[in-house]
Length: 295
Ligand code: UTP
Image 1 (cartoon, rainbow, N blue to C red):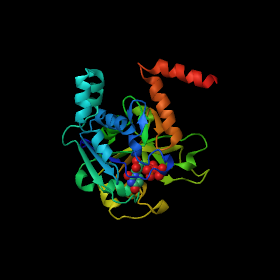
Image 2: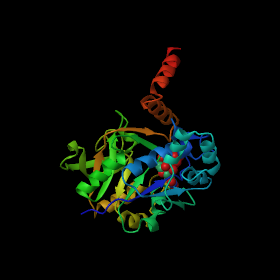
Image 3: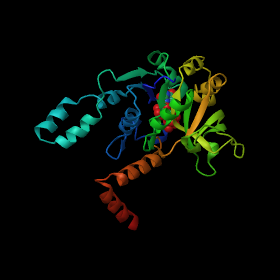
Image 4: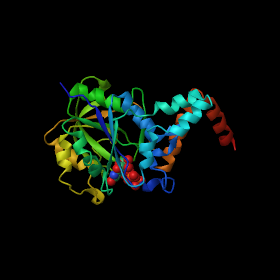
């Protein structure tokens, strides 16, 4: 019987070089996608997957993240006084419950692996999720819910993957696959390895690691060695590879669409897609786009 996944680590302490200067004063993950910050969409995905505790790995100047998920007394009383109950309800829907969020300072952006390791004391001895909030994953059920269902079926560690665009696999972290697990429409496979940015033509598959994981606490021991990898950073993939020598890993080719919001074009695509699929605003968004495209 697998232990339930209750906690999620959300590393947000990176420099966000690809999206500057947009994220110079606003933390990258508080940039907007349609009607709310990227991070609010990702937290909603975590909640829908049953996550009870969100552990944000933050850096300097990211206090606004904590404020976003807390009450804003003046705003809320102003909305209540004006009778704007629908907006108030929407504002309230993103609030965390007391004790449901923790913030850990990474102190220096030494890499994704180092960011995850910063949560070690809060994770303790439980399996946990990692959600990379740059990656907005539009899916029903959500990407993390799909990963947790896979974890409940096969245990061990689960890495969410998806096909790289044609001819671009060499730009990503690509997985090497073994046997197909039962169920999941053949999308869940044993993982036998992974390689960062393989030389073109040497890719073991076309599936890249896309931003949601269910990991066993043993990965923290591996990260604790602080081994530097690509770019001089402490890489999560290196620690997972070492853990793979003693624990099972599966890759789940999830069903959904991913937007890399750490990049200006990805953020734009996400905004357009989320506006178009919104039941109330979709038709107006489509009409506005048609006008722009006709020029
Ligand atoms: P990325 O490399 O995609 O994000 O890391 P980045 O470093 O912010 O962006 P670029 O590449 O410079 O444009 C994936 C996730 O891991 C976090 C990032 O904030 C992002 O959410 N991260 C990365 C940390 O929290 N700490 C780090 O040291 C590195």
